[in-house]
Length: 182
Image: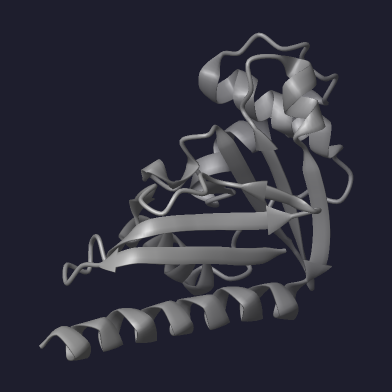
């Protein structure tokens, strides 16, 4: 799992911070719009900070037992009413997914900005000392969604270190951009 970003133009406003792109890499695939002016960076930066503040809270009790494909299809059917072939999941799992998708901030992307206007979705599930990332594109067909799927599990400490390092570097670049223009 990795984060890639680029800023074409920094902006003094903390809510926007800059115009550029924010990508999430998982399982050898890229999620997000790679265009120098794809989005305002403030939403992605704020979302990374929120994930850091809520470390360990992105929980789904059966996370290690659910198939990534089944979870992705259930999520797009639940949120977007896609009508894809619904996986056979225990009713209590469906209820928990539906209840905790937002309550436990399982959805990392989209993050409210144009960064993921390509339909990319990234789910984060904290599972003890591991973090599981399930990423996919909400595509026109179930086959396209399935071919876009990535399922990566990494050490929790390593995962949060990646987020922390990106946030610190980005904030430093943003702050230095104000010094240079002042």
